[in-house]
Length: 145
Length: 145
Image 1 (cartoon, each protein chain N blue to C red):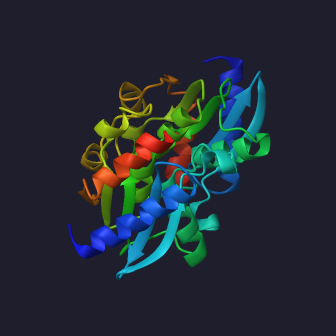
Image 2 (cartoon, helix red, strand yellow; image 1 turned 120 degrees about the vertical axis):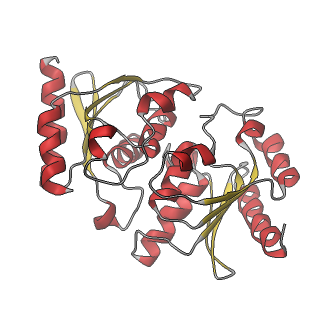
C-alpha cells in the first residue's frame, strides 16, 4: 500500500463517517481528489445513489463529459455489480477498494458478483486492487450497517 | 405476449425513438405507466443515465421512496449489469425486455452478463422475460447504434 493509497482511502472513510454509512468513495486524478461521495440512497430517495455511482455522476456532470478516463476510484467497500458496471461505462482507469464483497455479506444483503467477474464479461477492463485499509473500512461496516 | 406487454413495450419504443436511441424504458404499476425514460447519457453528461436506471431514479425521486416493489420494468433491450442491479436494489417485481444482450452485442460494445446471471448472484430475484416485440426493438438498434 502506497502513501497515496492510504491518503485517498482515508478520505473515502471520512466521507462515509460523516454520513454514518459504511460506503464512501473518492475519484482521484493526478494525485488530487476531484470528487467524493457517500451512499445517499435514503437522503436522496434514490436506490441507485451508492457512493461510487454518485461520485461518478457528480464528477461527470461537473466536467460536462461522460468519459472519466485517467481517474482512479477509491471506495471503502468493493463495488456492487451496479457500481462496478458504472465505473466501466465511465471508463475509470483503476479501482481500489477496502473490504471485499465476501466481507460485506457478513453485514448486509448483497449481489455477490465480484468486481473482477464483471471485468471478465466486459468489453473494457478496469485494474482492480482490494484490501487497502480494510480494517478501518471494516469498522464502518460494524458501526453503520 | 399479452396485449399489455405489447402496449407497454410500444411505449418504451416510442420514447427511445423520440431521443433517437435504441434504449427506452417504462415503469408500470397496476396497468398504468408511471415513468418513462430513454438513454440520456450524452444529453445529461451522465455515463450512468441508461434508460432503465434513469426511469428508476426519476420515479423514486417523484414518489420519495427507494422501494419500487409492485412495479414492472419494460425495456427495449435487456438491461446491462448496471441497470439490472439497479432494478434489484429498487426491488422491481418484474423485468420484460425486447432484444437480448447477444443481439445487442452485434451493434454495440457491452458488458455481456445476462440479467438472469445477475439474479443468480443476488439476495433478491426479479422475474425476467425477454423477446417482447424484439423485431421492433431490433429496428431501433439498427437505426440508432
